[in-house]
Length: 310
Image (cartoon, rainbow, N blue to C red; front, side, top):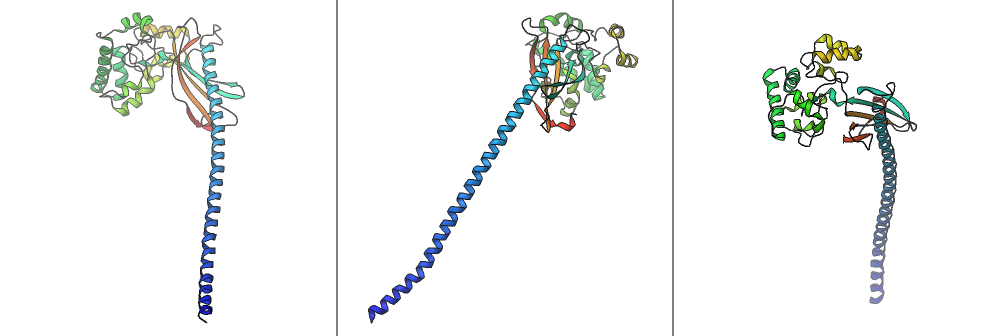
């Protein structure tokens, strides 16, 4: 009788434990299945991400190749001996079809800007005064530039005539006070907001610091001592004789020579892309007998929505 009762009790305990074991096994199975689903989903996501990344990389590389081709096109036009095909460096945008894509290319003579390393002190003062509206602030900025020049070259103040006579030797001098325009923005005493406004009109790549009036934007022209409003308006419709008259009026600050450095901006848009790639280069022509041009600098590439550049 005791054995029978004991057996019944044991059997009841086993019956209670078995459902618990089944429930635990079911949880393990569900956990394994869930982990497998997550793993497969992650793998698929990684594959899709890698594929998209590869496609994007290929597209970007093709656009970069188009940008480089645009620089070659610009250099070819800048040195072309045919007057009808040669670009003057006036910043006009030229749109061409190339390899099934559209390129927008402009070349601007670096002599059209104020050179931090070579422009005359009076020209610098006049230019800064246009933006500061204060003779004191303009003089302060001019002094900062001039002191940086003196520290870099170990010489005193240099007139525009001296700069022009030395131009063949130090067009791209390693002793320059400013290697790039942005150095001025990092200089103590230069307000950031003011620098951001003047930076588009500054350069470090001009021939001798004199201004090419054909390539110069209006804020630069208005800063040139000796030029009046009538001269500036005449430049809109200028031919060579008109430019010669303007050069004569302000010959200490103006030149009728272009180059050798040019800012080349190229925008490339491929038909299948929703964006365009832009990049600005600085090149110099006629300085290296073994090459049509020399690359002096290039800014980072920028991607913008295509509709904004069309």
